[in-house]
Each structure stands twice: as C-alpha cells, then as structure tokens.
Image (cartoon, rainbow, N blue to C red; front, side, top):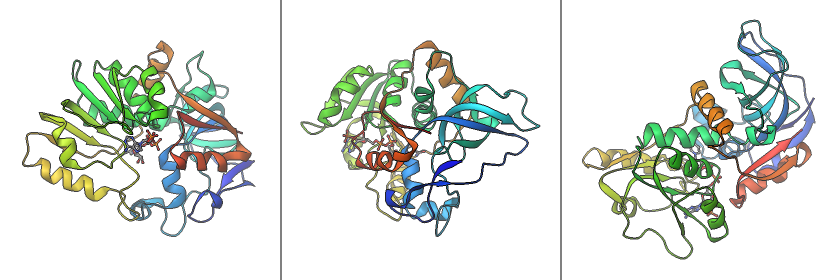
Length: 321
Ligand SMILES: NC(=O)c1ccc[n+]([C@@H]2O[C@H](COP(=O)([O-])OP(=O)(O)OC[C@H]3O[C@@H](n4cnc5c(N)ncnc54)[C@H](OP(=O)(O)O)[C@@H]3O)[C@@H](O)[C@H]2O)c1
C-alpha cells in the first residue's frame, strides 16, 4: 500500500510517499481502509522530534518509532480482530489509528466510533485529537460550568475551532482571540466576542476560565485577566523552546498555583472512547461542526504538513488516499 513515511526527524522534507507492507492487526484491532485523515500539531511534533522532551517520552530517541505519520482517521472497517465485537467489516468509523497517512491503517477498536450518517469522511477525520483535546481542556481541566466567562487564546487553531463551539455548547460566554484574517471564522463558530490580537489584546475583562492554546503571553498578564478564583488551563503553544516545549512554563504555573486562589494548570489530552462517542453524538445533532481548510491528496501530504507548520490554516487539513 502507499503511505507517507519518514526515517529520521526533521522538517516536512523528511516525508515521502512509499510502498509499504499492509498493517497487521491484533485481536482487539480493526484494519481500516482509510478514506480521510487529518493533521494536528502533534503530528508535526512527532515528525520533527521537537521538543526533544517527547523523544524521551517514548516517541523514539533518534527517529520516530512509527514510520507512518498521522493518527486521526475516518474510514471503512476492512477486517476486524477476533476479539472485536462492536464493529464489523463495512462499518464506517472515525477515531485514532496508527499511521493515518496511508491507504490502510490499524487501529484499536477501543478508539474508533461509528461515523454519523450525514457526516462525510473528511468531516469525521477532522475531529478526533483536536476536539477531544478541546473537550477535556474545557470540561475536565477547566471544570467549565454554564454561565461562566471563557477566553480561548488561539481560537482559530485546530483545537480552538472546537474549543469555541464546545464552550458555547457547555453554556459558556465565549471570547476568542485570533489574528485579523481569522476573526470572521471565530465569529462564525459562535464566539460572543472576538479579539483581533494584532489590534488589541487582553483588556479589563475578567474570565472564569482561560484556555491558552498559543502560550506566548506572560503568566502575570493572564492572571490579571482571571477572576480571583478563575482557572487558567495551559494547553500548548509553539514558542516554549526546542528542548522542553513550554513544560517549564506549566510547571512554574502549577507551583505558583499552590499559593493562589486562582487555579493555574497544565493539561494532557487522552484519547477515550466515551469522549469520541460524545463527539459523534454532537456531530450527529449538528451541535459541533468540523471546519476544513483544505483537502489534499496523499501525494501532497508534505504540502499539507508545511501548511500546518505555517499556522495559517483556517480549519483542519485533510488528506485523502
Ligand atoms: N496538552 C495537550 O494535550 C495538547 C493537545 C492538543 C494540542 N496541544 C498543543 O496546543 C497548541 C495548539 O494546538 P492547535 O492544534 O490548536 O495548534 P494550531 O492549529 O497550530 O493553532 C494554533 C493557533 O494559535 C494562533 N496564535 C498564534 N499566536 C497567537 C497569539 N499570540 N495569540 C492568539 N493566537 C495565536 C494561530 O493563528 P493566528 O495567530 O493566525 O490566530 C493558530 O490558529 C499546540 O502547541 C499543540 O501542540 C496540546
């Protein structure tokens, strides 16, 4: 089968399309005929090996352990392992797999859910990691309750487009921060207020919850924008350095939080079947809308990765085999 592989860490130039062996599945796995995959920032981190911290956390010291990039997928079950009872060949599913940028991919059946009718493969592939991250950051780390004021910094990014919609769904009063060209998009996602950070930034408004997806503002500035008992969830940002990637900022915030009434916390998303099921229900009900910037063929996956790196996309980047 064709797949997008890499044999060393580096820029998108290390990616190439190659003929590789079909994946072999275990008893609890599903072999998927991939219909669409999407990129997220984590794919870029695994491709580059940046920050270095991820290399010692199991992704491979000298090169990525998995050669085929991509995790987020939508496709058709081609065959299922002997222990899989909830899915059968022919089922249309979406979720998380090993090596989505390929014609076929193996996935644990515990990380796949049925694709709602009326949702395309491209739309479904746009959801898993980014929307799960947004949901868990708001609900679990942020403990968002209805009526609270929420600020999403990086509202037009892969996670941000879902964070704005899910924060509204959970009853929040939502402000999104993005650059000028993305104001219209963030408004269309339902944000009550949109701040164009190239014209102004955090003002006198106080928020119960700040989701920091861009990670380049001083903690003191963010704290001034929180209510006295508000919560800051630091999800990420791309300017935390090549070695630690911002982990030092999160640790500093969590230590500071010990002596404050405000809660400053980091966050690590975890793929869970129940959250994918919840997102599938929201998609089916029309309460969550994937935003797609562009669909690329597998042969142009390198261009898609470069686009992801630029930070310019207005929505998710989809790749179809
Ligand atoms: N902790 C976890 O488990 C977890 C899970 C998912 C993602 N992450 C991390 O979270 C971060 C965001 O992920 P993502 O997928 O949304 O990334 P993304 O798609 O690259 O989006 C980042 C967004 O931040 C915006 N941005 C850049 N500078 C900004 C600034 N000064 N103020 C406001 N917005 C700014 C960018 O667009 P504009 O500047 O044009 O508005 C872009 O839309 C990444 O660092 C990712 O690695 C962590």
